[in-house]
Length: 225
Picture: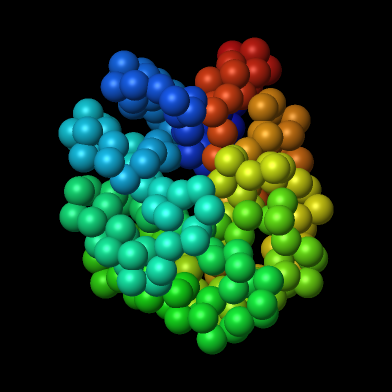
């Protein structure tokens, strides 16, 4: 069942360890190519470096912008998105302005989301909106899902991995229930093993962000090879 291994690998967004250097980026890209992961997730300044290593491999580069708190202006986020795309990003993910979510400022959040999603769509780049659920109530998550259902980003994402908590099955289920079916869900942070990955997928996740990707693939290999 090598097909199952490839299927899972193509759901994984491989995340580097925090605080690493270029040697860690080298290994991240080499491992992503070896195990055929869908994407590597890096900071904007690392996009061009990783894109060069991964050229022709089929592994995408995802750029995180306005990390980790999302408190920059809409204009700054759009500039970062444009810059990341110019550097070669295949995917862009940004953190919503949580303060405006707490205010239930639908106009602001809609404008922010539409500005970045539109920029990505014009350049055929995937867009991902990070909710940072660990700081949100259920009603606030639903509020964001309803806005996303109108704006239509490619993905909505549970967490950055820098917050107080990671993805939960309950949050993924909630997002799947209230976001339109054509929006994919990325679960990230706290997914350390195959059992947790499958639980997230069963709950409705389409993409998994993890720094434990190799461990997960080795668990699969032990089953199928």
